[in-house]
Image (cartoon, rainbow, N blue to C red; front, side, top):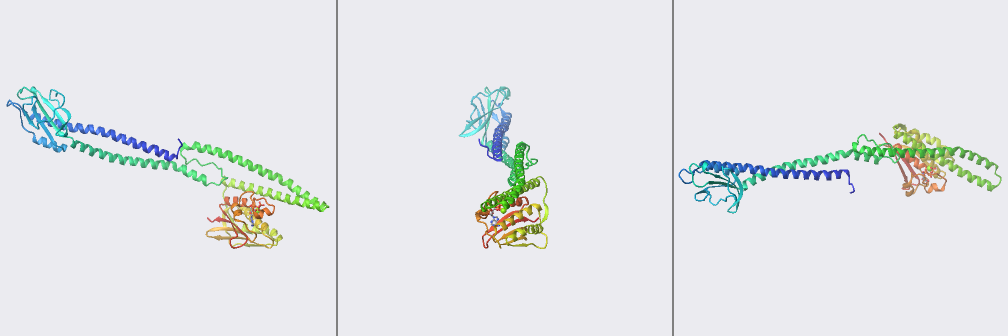
Amino acid sequence: MAIRSLRSTLLWMLIPAVVVVAALSWWISRIELEDQVSAAFDRALAGALQSIAVNVSTESGGLAMEQPFYMLEFLEHATDSPVYFRVASEDGLSEIGYTQLPLPAFRLPENAQPVFYDAEYFGEPLRMAAMALGPSRLSAPLGSRIIIQVGETTEGREAFMHRVAMQWLRKDAAILLLFVLLISVGTILALRPLRETSENVLKRSSGNLLPIDESTLPREVRPLVEAINVHMERNATKAASQRQFLDDTSHQLRTPLSVLMMQVEYARTLAVTDEMKEVLAAIEQRLSNTIQLTNQMLALGRVHDAADQLRAGESLQTVDLCAIARDVVAELLGAARRKRQDFGLEVPDFPVNVQGIGWLIHQALSNMVENAIKYSPTQAHITVSVSLIGGEAVLQVDDDGPGMSEKDISLAGRRFRRGDAGKRVHSAGLGLAIVQTIADINHARLELESGDSRPGLVVRMVFPMS
Ligand SMILES: Nc1ncnc2c1ncn2[C@@H]1O[C@H](COP(=O)(O)OP(=O)(O)OP(=O)(O)O)[C@@H](O)[C@H]1O
Ligand SMILES: [Mg+2]
């Protein structure tokens, strides 16, 4: 059987079980109640028999009786149902009271021993008590035993039983309801830590492989979480070693690539034919792209390392976005000038502080500005700005270059994904992936806007202000 949720399994098993147990207990109690009520009502009938017996006399030679009206009235009142009696000699010659009151199917025992039986009297069900008085119990011998019978209709005892049973039912139903409520609340409370933990795990960023905190979880599920943690640790180690391998490879490649670049540059000075110069220029271009790719891969590796350190407990610092913007603009001014681009900086004259890692934000802004310079034509306008909008700090680069298509924007940030503009030049497709990762680490949002009312692209990182 497929297991549904733990909660519904528990509730579906516990609640019906409690209901069945309660119903069973109520049914058993009802049977016991019937026995006890019957015994109590029968005792009252037996009492009536005794009080009639002391009033029976045979002294006159016949059967006489002083009728115990008070007692019969009391009995009727107590049992809340009509009471019938009959006193008669066993041979049926003398008879007082209600004639034809049915006798039991068996012979009555001696010694005035009361017996009880069910009978019917003019279509009415009766509970009867009867006893026989032998010669030793009679004031004068009569030649026959005297039979005394008392009967009452059963409606009184049944009504009483029903009343008590209903009281019990109401009480049991209230207790049952309380139980069901307690079970439901208990189950929800017991499973809440599990739900909270799964929500926390779902909220994690994809690279976060830190162990799940098991301290708040019920003891029963801890082994499972421990196993998942071990599994995640193995994955984290594997991912780290893969990344390390990539970092090492990029690092190892850097030196030979730089040496190759120098050799190609030197070879170009020695080239004599135009074909040779052309081939060497192409090689140099390829080499420069490969060096750019290696540098971007190293940068991505460093950004991931920073993310790991942050997850392992390192905290963010207060950084001034204006200072970072000034530094990046100063560093890339030369590149923009070479393309005769109008490169501007708009920052307020007060610091705009956010929580983050300064060198990472610097790296992200450099990538954003490098893109603007690279993809915008000569004499384009590029502006780096810092502003405060709606309680958030915005670090923005806008240009009036070719902009990006909607599809390119939706795929921006994927590794090795180059857009329309990127395909025209040689590029690695890693710049915005690095920016996106840095934005995540610094709890910022990356936004790209293009083509609505003006040419070009606006790229911004939006930081929450605490
Ligand atoms: N300012 C911009 N104007 C027009 N297109 C842009 C701009 N910035 C980015 N793009 C597009 O987005 C794509 C992805 O940019 P990203 O920086 O991630 O990679 P790249 O520039 O191609 O390579 P890399 O930066 O790693 O050398 C680019 O290929 C380009 O098509
Ligand atoms: Mg780029």
